[in-house]
Length: 244
Length: 178
Ligand code: SF4
Ligand code: SF4
Ligand code: SF4
Ligand code: FES
Image (cartoon, rainbow over all chains, first blue to last red; front, side, top):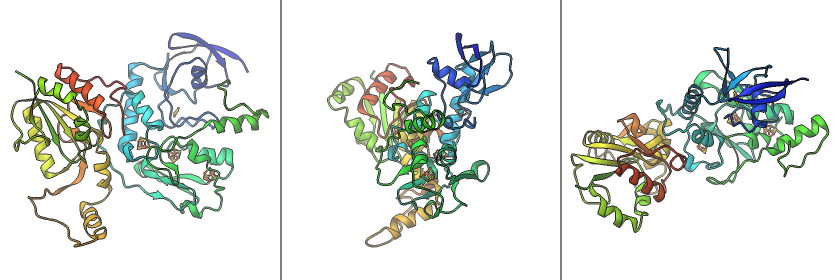
């Protein structure tokens, strides 16, 4: 492990070579919007919200999966990046069915927060109103695919942390969706332990607890850091503190 | 001359207009500043010409909404999507995954307690469009007020800005879905 020095938004920062640009930026209080990334799970770089510019490279790079290099010059909030980010959120909005006013996670939703973050006044692309399904066959939980942004956090937490691997991705393009088991009702899954981790890490109202009404559900994700740190380092961190 | 302001009610629940009425005593101040030339809360049958600012509640859900939207655009200098249904379709557009016939059947036959019958007295009753659309997909829109419904404070701030000839900046004050 080596310590590297790089520049992010004009600020000289240092980070370890096995960390991502996103992690280093966060340690230095530099905010980069994210959606598929969640601290504690493998970074997959799929949502592209965290794209940054790296000097000397014509391509934009996802901060969550890009490792730093000595002397790297990174920009996280240029006009071009902001344009791209807004467009991504617009596409997410137009490819799902989001009615925040009647959504269980209204006011506690990462997609909503992203919309505010990127300054989304309205969606320029035609809304597709795709036909999506809702599965309430599980005794405790519901998956409402109308609200799913395909971040695969549910899939990863179930596979990486719970070890059950209930979720998978099926279909392509606009037909892409999250499925349980062998594309069977969630309630029929033999592998689901009903631990509820997928529900907690889901950034939107796609995975919810039964019995919650509009705007009632607030998700807490700090359990993830607790479990992952305990497993990796045999350290049981204090969940009330914000210390690293 | 006072600015000529209109409000219109398309495919929405009237909640945005209720929130407008929640301006309470500020309505009196507003009444002194503007001429309300068309509104569901005033008695005008025809959308007039030469309007400065029009707030439009609701999605464009039926043929009558669509017709009025075009008249509004033609006759208004500034058109504002007023509330989430106008901005994004919102609850009004929840039916869009199904054919209107399926939706009508569900509402008027399957869920009816007495006299199951689909009303079809067109054009007395306006025919549904295949899908309810956000206003800006039908006409050009100049400004957006979010919320389901927008709060009366949001409406007040937006109106103050609009009447001063400014388009309300999309700050966090305005940016709010749900
Ligand atoms: S998931 Fe978020 S963005 Fe989608 S309807 Fe619910 S609150 Fe709104
Ligand atoms: S409840 Fe637990 S085991 Fe079941 S799908 Fe979710 S994460 Fe996997
Ligand atoms: S259900 Fe939730 S966590 Fe899973 S992919 Fe969809 S939005 Fe992400
Ligand atoms: S957060 Fe980096 S690509 Fe999704």
